[in-house]
Length: 230
Image 1: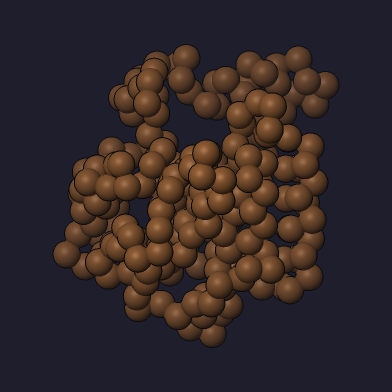
Image 2: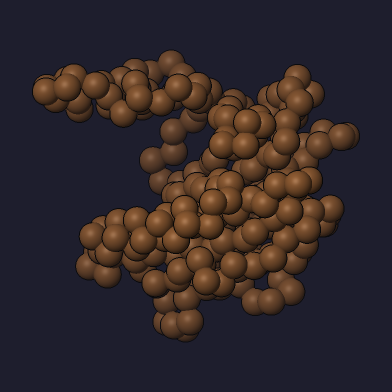
């Protein structure tokens, strides 16, 4: 759970599907080898400031099984709920994706915003999710490389407009999708970013420079921002 700049509580859940070397949530919770805080503390043990990046964050992040998510929403008043998923092929994993969302929903709540990365080849009108606007997405144009790609589902009760000026898409390097939502009297920019890491096309320097420039542009608008990157 995190608290955004608007002062309201929002929920953000992320889940990564891996095709190999799967690690269950129980392993993450019980095995120190998979504990992010422990790994960062080891990395920064010899740092002159002796401070892990997680120590500079006041938010508390917890792991939840998918079946427990629906109960969490019953326990908290929230402004906006978000979920981000690396699906490694949205059409190929559609049934799993749909069933996962159903498992995490309850009678009164489902996610307001859903970001999806590595959607691979998707055509307009495909992968429609009931209760949501049509998928806003961008994929790689090269027919010989239909991997990558990024999209956002927005609940059909929310008003939004695409932000193509912010949605920078550099195949294999920086793939992003941004929307602007009107929520009450607030204007919120929502962004999903995917950083491909396939050598030699991926370029971390270009990615970092692009992200900094993008954040600078958004900062000049003085609007609320919710951003996630996979």
